[in-house]
Length: 300
Image (tube, rainbow, N blue to C red; front, side, top):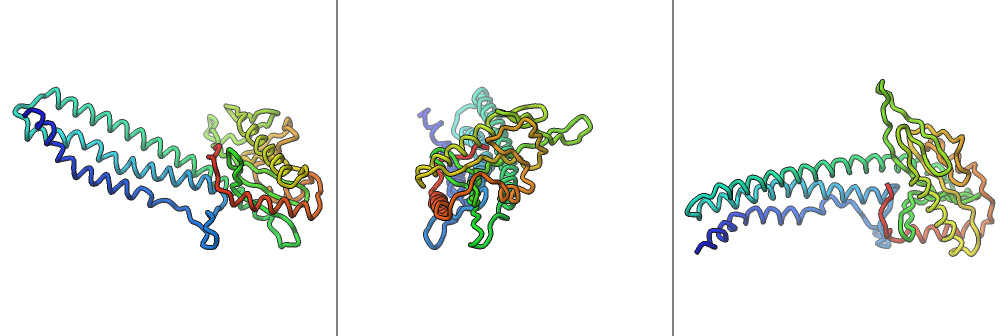
């Protein structure tokens, strides 16, 4: 029967299918998420949301790198099986197998390059988050000096990078990683001008970082008012690690800094004093919120 010529070669795909099954079973080996042995809550570090995205990017790279050769070889393996069972060779059919393999090679090359670029971008973002997190850790003092720092606070639809609580206000800190373009002499151009609604980088401008920082500060302000029953002074802080900030035209509601000396800057900032009882309520509300599972991805 003619249809057996097309069915029987599928037997030769069995080893490839078994290998693909093993690859799929091992795809979660890179998952680095851990949970507390005390209360089973996920343990969160600075940049945890980016760490999770980086884990998923490495998983995608592993799958594309391991499954790519298997999928690419499948048409050729099937074609060689057809050679054993076919009465005569159809060269047009072999041309189709070759074209399909070539298309699959191009597809997986594109996927691997995409994964590489994504991992490179996420690593840069994570490095900036860790640098800002380490700077903010300098705020932490003994119990009598009430400074608190929280990382990756989940809101309703997004995740806030850092929240710093001082005796004089709450600071919502967002971090953005941007690479420096080079001038004609190969020197990095590292100055960014802050305007009312946008950041003017060398060669391009962006509005989203300022808008997202305002959105995060607004959400925190309304959420604390709901949780604590009063208006808590909140200010958004946008950190651009490694950039020189031109703040001549900067807005008053968002503080844009490079990150150097951030801990001292926030410790000395005065948004408005509030009593010990309110300060404790805000700290407890943020601690409860920090234990919530995030419901959205990052903005980077």
